[in-house]
Image 1 (cartoon, rainbow, N blue to C red):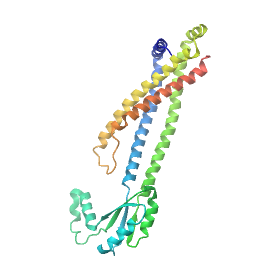
Image 2 (spheres, helix red, strand yellow; image 1 turned 30 degrees about the vertical axis):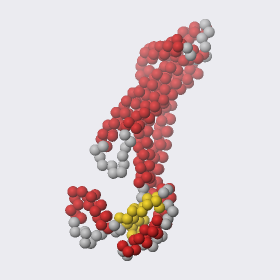
Image 3 (cartoon, rainbow, N blue to C red; image 1 turned 45 degrees about the horizontal axis):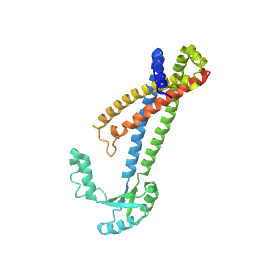
Length: 296
């Protein structure tokens, strides 16, 4: 593709967009709607995945010690727990530690816990981290068989639920995107059809004097790509504004261990996804239209 030819293709594409302004607007609007939904599920998906990974990294098994075990037996119990292959570390939480933790959790209302020092209702426990989180169920089962262990609290069920939610979000986003991409391609194809029809005499003359098939095709393909890129840029601006606004709103909320991915870490992902998919939708719409309505 020569420099002069490329300039001609781009100029022709812009002129065609101007002549079919209404349909071009509808096509770009459809691409925007498609990419906004993509952005919504993309932002939701990457944050859910990040939260899932965060929970996996922080996942612990809590082992509650039997009330009959006194401090003299804790050393032996700790040794037995550490003998389990998948146990990475063991942290002892005494009754006093548990009470102090509850005081911090209650904050200004911690006075309701006054008087519990003498008759502490909490039990000594262990916080156990694992080498392999996928073996949490087996590890919990082994811990439950140790003498002196009264209760084992495992977060595996929560992890499984989060993984399930992540899969649902991912699957739903894929199917919704496929549907909207098909609609976008269809509308862009109709826009290109109008351009082809309006320039049918010019195209016939070009072919009569020996213009190649691709010389005829390129202006329409570039037109579709330009419509897709315009829609992608607008969608990127809108989703960026919405994402930053959500981060500002969520920044004032206490979400515990959860933290959302900062905008600067996802900005280029959004930009690349929107421009790439927008251009792809536009190119496919043009290609399908050309195959059916141009005898080239």
